[in-house]
Length: 558
Image (cartoon, rainbow, N blue to C red; front, side, top):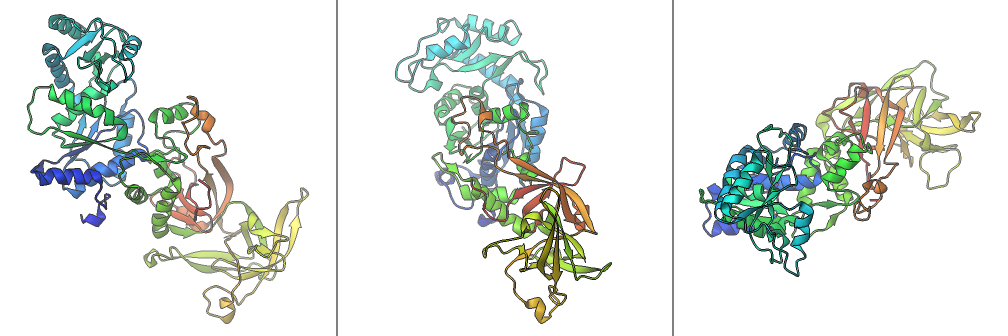
């Protein structure tokens, strides 16, 4: 892969760190990276940045990348989340060298915990979590030592083995590292290494009653797997000191010690990146599931119709920074349009139809028009459109009276039917409720698009799309708006994210009329509904339902 083809197209500070290590003698053949998600939910667009970063470095340096599941909390993790994570990574175009699990190392981690106890670097604390948290105090003053901190090695070994065998209930005791209760870094104040969880694990079943914390499992898993550079988001910067301390206090069996370095996480406007809060809105039924097209999950974006290339380009444009900032959602839309414009099949769909009758078009006549499938790529070919006296157009493409800035159909003015003829509005039929029931127009028979006649080259200011009333397909269409009302949802929700939900984030058109070609629409294709936006066939429905991915231009205020 060439440098320009890599998801990391410009050298960033993390790549500089790696290159400096190489220039200082680190063996390039020993570079190894990892992507370590916890399988407690679906991946979101923020995870895509980390995926592109780690797997991008794998491609840049021709180095292996492990997929490691941080499965240390059996109460929240399951195989469904694991399978979805693997599907997302593959869909983005990446493959991993080894599929690993923190649970692969539970026996080793337990043995190393015994090693810590024997070296007086860990102890069993019989206090509850609330008391332990209170004793840690605040960074500017020392914490309070646990009354159990000086238990003998023998007593700690006995208690820890009883914890392992299920001799205590959850919350009755924990294993803590013995470090420094006066450290200004709160994570160094005797952190918890093991807690009791009486819940079957998706892989180890009922073997374990105690489970390692993230801090105890993560760095040691990196060490076991020979990870050279452990890349984390900025919230783990304060964990780095503990990361290094724990690795320094386990028996050394390997030459390579992993190096943790941090980068800014992806924050996207009008979006939340908390799996816990995303899980809440799923459980509350605010959305239909983790893959709801309004969700910022990778599966939700995929179902909405965002192509993988758009996400890769987006992550590349966002780049890798040392400071947190909020990225405008419009950038993701821009990247999506860039890709979809090149790969989408053009079709005509009328969302809110009103009948249009061409008064001077011959009765019982129909003809076939030709339209390009993609003006950006001739290889997409062309398609046939049926045309007759009676058509459907968009209701908002007609006004009885309009000002000079209105370039769609109105009485006594001309517009062109896309790929068809020039028409002029003549009169309307109104129903009992005062709504327009039918529009009547005349057409210029010599103005057919592509016919080569002088009349066909005649310019009019407006062009509208249409569908033949005598040959169309009924479809449903979902139009989406942003899911959250606030640019920074979650900041001022007082713990209730539902207060930030946009209750008008979806609008469904069940009576949309589409050209007949969409009867054979497939899930692997992307479509541009001309003048309406980019759409994708919904993968979860047995009916013909399309989800709008993004508008044709940035006319939505984010």
